[in-house]
Amino acid sequence: MASAKTEVIEYLGKKYLADPNKFSVVTNDDIANAIDHLGADLSKRNPANFLKDIIRNKRANENWPKFLKDKQITARQRYGQKRVLQFYPYDAGQTVPFPDEFGPDGDTNDYLIQTASLPFISRQLGRTEETWLTQIAVNLRLVETQLSIFTKDPNIADLRDVSFLQTGIKTQPEIDAGYVASASDGEGQEFAFYVTCEVKQRVERILLDQIREQVMKAFQITKNLTEPTIKAVKPFAMQSLAASDVSGLEETEIGFYVIEFENVLREEFEGQVLNSTDDEALYSLELKRCSSTLYRCRPPITALR
Image 1 (spheres, one colour):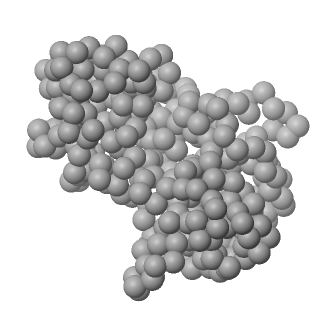
Image 2: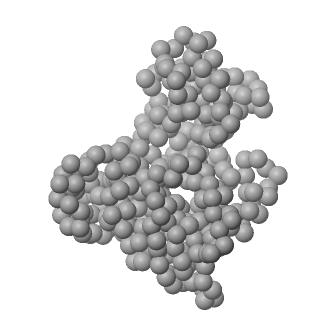
Image 3: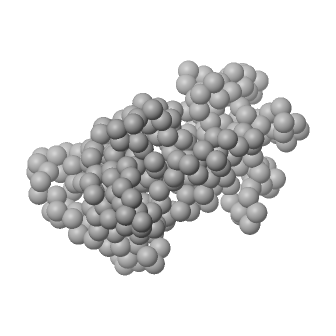
């Protein structure tokens, strides 16, 4: 229930405003204690996902407490060590708690992609959750297509290959799909990079901080790999999206919206984040969108909605 959760969030936000240093990060126990204190009709079984249900929904700005909006306070998910969320003030120029930063723009490509390689029944009986969307995206080779045709990453002069690894990588946060790719840079030097994919349903928001966390996890899990050495991580985000959201026309067709970000180089990441004295340096990491495409499916995938 958004209203009950909003009440709990507001209560915790007021504690944060009273003492930002002490109450910035909210833990599982803090959530449970707040539910008890307010007598809220909410389960305490899975507090780790308490904020997830609010901020991933496209109604996040509506569901955020007015008191915190007036104070220009927002929050992000935190992972591990029983952490749930972290309150922090708006950035300069920010007007809503959860701005949508990754929608289609004038540079978004509009591209037809075949789906005949998918069984007819799977195109009819699919589901809407991320696991099924990820499976379809992998089978349609959307990452391979984006990197082969549309990438404008200045770090990639010539793409060599892209190899799918697995779906559902159980890190915190989970990485929906992972790949390893290789390319040469502008000086002709070959290098390997890891690709992370975050997949969202149409009604969900793409979260910048979640992608940053995935980048850090990808660097951690590939740190000791030597053949090949992973010199960069390339984040991707994907979402089922109406064609009208891209074209501006009255189109009901649902396709896959794919966002590619520039490679994050390991050397730069270590200098800016891992070796920083700022514990929050990760959340200042700049992620630059370098291409985006709406993939229209032919024949249509009826189950996309």
